[in-house]
Image (cartoon, rainbow, N blue to C red; front, side, top):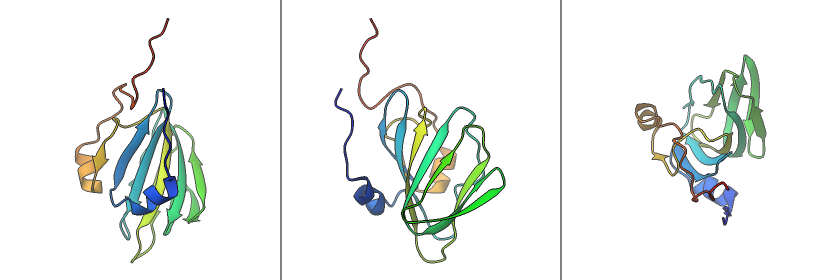
Length: 138
């Protein structure tokens, strides 16, 4: 297996998609996200997935089980599995750029959803297929 290497800050800042899955392994998944001004992910819960967010541009708010955190470039947030959460772009003019790591994977590998509406209409969950073919168990 070769793993995955990239300039994550450059990729995150260049991303214009609501969601873009970059790499999926058996136990985690790297996803780029971009929220338009005043857009939000929407209140959600992942019963089986921890989620890490790293913010690269913009300003926003993360809500976790009623707790509210202001976020900006350089901030990171961890959301435990089972927590109700939302990420909100609080800017009226700038996109909120971030990457997230799900553990275990949450979405189908290599999925790109240009808009939130497209993501909501086609929310395909992880199907067990990883970016790299997993070695056979002996």
